[in-house]
Length: 181
Image (cartoon, rainbow, N blue to C red; front, side, top):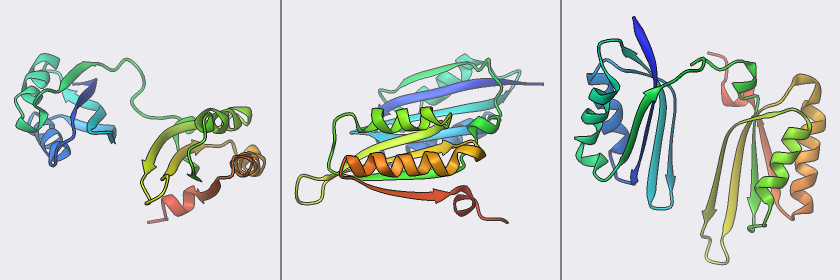
């Protein structure tokens, strides 16, 4: 029998952090499901829906992760995951939309409104300020699940919205993200 847990870790970014956390979880018999990792400024955030043996407690997992040198000063949470650990169709990425250019206040809000208008689900989003010798560039990546009937309208509106903000927009379709095996 297994249990589903949400494991989160927030701490200063360190080389080897993902390897240390994933390795320790593996040693405990914990299997990673949907997992994300991001550097946020000088911090790092790791989140995973995990499948753990019933005889491994949340407290044991917490203690094992807290003992890692790479996780020094980390804020760690291990708690039951009360939802379905497998995404439905709304959680499967159909398109990856990149928006790039100078930082524009409201950029994320405007783009998110476009996706919401077409009932597209934002599955993942990342935004990053990239220094380029000038004022820098802002790069936002949206991984979205767009209903098939709305794909063309949604992507055209996203490109137009980015253009209105004087930003570049590039789209990759899911078949380019996950080529056939």
